[in-house]
Image 1 (spheres, rainbow, N blue to C red):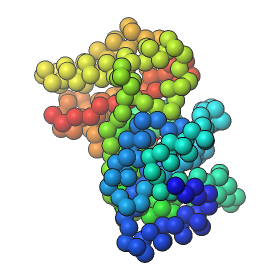
Image 2 (cartoon, rainbow, N blue to C red; image 1 turned 180 degrees about the vertical axis):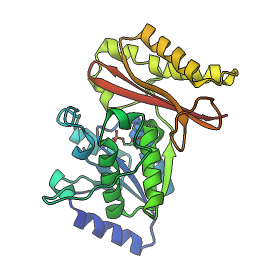
Image 3 (spheres, helix red, strand yellow; image 1 turned 135 degrees about the vertical axis):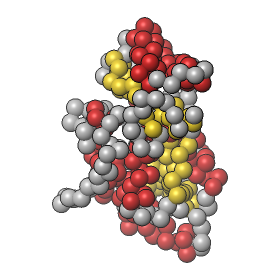
Amino acid sequence: MRIVRTVKSLRACIKKAKSRHQTVGFVPTMGALHDGHLSLIRRCRKENDLAVISLFVNPKQFGPQEDFAAYPRPEKKDKLLAKKEKIDIMFYPSGKEMYPSGFLTTIEVERLTEHLCGAARPGHFRGVATVVGKLLNMVAPDRLYLGQKYAQQAAVITQMVKDLNFPVTVKVCPTVREPDGLAMSSRNVYLSARQRQEAAVLFRSLQQAKKEILSGERRASHVVRRMRQTIKTHSSGTIDYIACVNADSLIPLEQLTGDVLIALAVKFGRTRLIDNICFHL
Ligand code: AMP
């Protein structure tokens, strides 16, 4: 595995691979790698000649009161894991390399970013779209691998790729979970033992909702109310949102039909966890 710290050397590596007609797959991450990331990496490895991962805790996607400084950065462990997974190139830039002084440009994807996490985290998706847009220009991959875990992020990036004509295919991969159903996340390490145990209720509430819907329930308000009850009864979490939306447009649904995404964000102490399920009716 080559660890590359500058855009210039990254471009040189990619140019060499492309001159050999190798296909390039890319997994952007903020590090603190877990099995969710590894599932994307493995798929990327399998489907491409060259597997590239980026490790960058992007300051532009954190709000002023958020956990940028505290975000876990287990550098050694990440490097070992990436090596073990036979990544070809790990792009590990500094903040200055990504945002040199005088940096002025941002990418704003409208409408899709207004609801769900966009409402609670103003500017978050601008930061995400900007960094992923930059990374796509640097890596020039044939395929980009994202997790369904961040459903809104996947929808925003897919829209950006389409609108700005990035020549890349977006692959959205399933959420990887702990044995009790909690979606893997770099932020799970913040949870106390009690919060960690309680947090399993998030996936249970999503499963319960799906079961009710598959038995005929079509009223979104009813589904959300029941999920609220379950989470409140079985945890100390504070609900930020629970929403039933169309999976592509993210427009809220009253009657559940078509491609449905049920998404939630719940805070345990200062740790905000998100999860979702997606299915077709
Ligand atoms: P992050 O490092 O948190 O920015 O995440 C990098 C990528 O990993 C994003 O595309 C996420 O959607 C994906 N990801 C995060 N958690 C999971 C998970 N539990 N299962 C699958 N993919 C995930």
